[in-house]
Image 1 (spheres, rainbow, N blue to C red):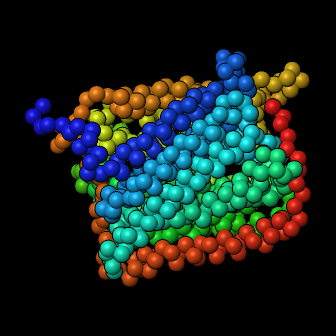
Image 2: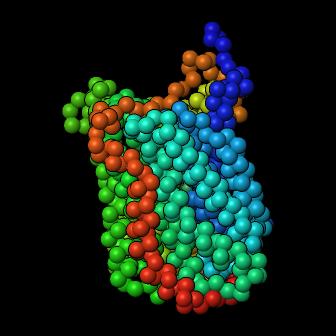
Image 3: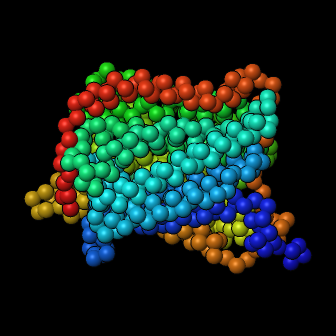
Length: 561
Ligand code: HEM
Ligand SMILES: [Cu+2]
């Protein structure tokens, strides 16, 4: 090798935040590896194939596996990956070093929280699913661990906002750099969104699981849960958008069309992500139809920034394709870098999101939800935005970011490419099978492949769609093996890239930049917009929550597993 490669000490010396980011991302991927194992078992279940006897005696039930799947994939993996990747991108974009001891504290709190929550989960003492609705009662360590994981995320909120404020002080009058703007807005959004879960955990779940209070009001608990439960999906999604706006155009060979439009989309999310949670409670009693209607309308508002994103990203990609020599109406698509697994992962994730968005608008349409609520339609739906759009994009980011941080080359890029495609196609099969079965009334969260003799065959009319789920199970198993192989082979590789081949951070340039635009100045007042979001949340939640607090009907806990 002509160029000397760097030793690990050199790599971290100039940018110590690299290490903590890597630690966060790796911890997230370890959680994902365990969580995803149950996925194929679950989709085969919905093909009426029961593979759970094979998991005995390690895992006690379908529902223990499903709890691990939901918690590890949706809560732990997403959050930890986001904490690592956004911290790093913001630090490099704004050239501000995070408060390193605080960043490490966040990591340790996350690790301790994960360990505490994992203990009852693995011992079958918290088989309550990742929504943990009372009166189902898990072990206290599950709630305390989950609460610590949320605390860690709030430390990340502080880290991001503190870095942004410091940048502002050092650069008076300048518009915040785009990636910094997007990451700060994301964390501020989560800072407001997390309050519901924090209140639920601190005032109800933890004291209850420790025996200090006798019962919890299920309706109040659910309402607090969904205060956070909807915006948490934007917390999973916005980091993917950060990459689609801020990096993908450059990776595709072009530029971002409009920087101010990207900012506007993120402000839309900051303001409208949280005041919408009742769309998860359309079927709940004790919440007035009026407020359910208000949340319906606001939910439609939050679709607008995603539609804006679709146009901005598609236009940026089209420009990239044309810059690469693509001609004609569709030729630009062919001219995108389809041999780059990082790009392809993100493109396929974005395509899946189009279908996910359409289904989401159905779910959010108040009375339409009664057709699909609590059926397999719902997991069919959310595996598009979360398990495909976000997850594939996070893999896509990892494909360049891990080599960037570690100086280790991406192992087996062709396997990565195949894994990304198979994951996408598998999820499409699964989405079709599950959506259609849901329309036939098959419930979600049910071990339907192991039903008692009396009920056996009651879902026989879905046999055709079950074939799609079986195919999905095969494709997704192969895809998962390929993707995790690439990931761990990269991490464990002993090869080092020569310094001139280490991937750079692909921050994209914008064709229409932020400079000198009055709108950008107004949008830059993030604290003001955060305040507006708080006011909106109080308006749409307080009338209901105050009533619920006044008329609490605590129910004793139950363990039915
Ligand atoms: C190999 C890939 C995967 C497969 C085959 C798969 C399959 C499934 C199936 C069939 C269900 C429905 C189970 C039921 O309702 O009884 C489910 C639930 C779920 N999955 Fe996945 N999944 C995969 C990956 C992921 C990923 C990557 C995420 C998130 C990042 C995720 C998040 C969830 C969540 C949150 C639930 C809901 C759990 C619940 O209802 O309590 N899945 N999965
Ligand atoms: Cu929602």
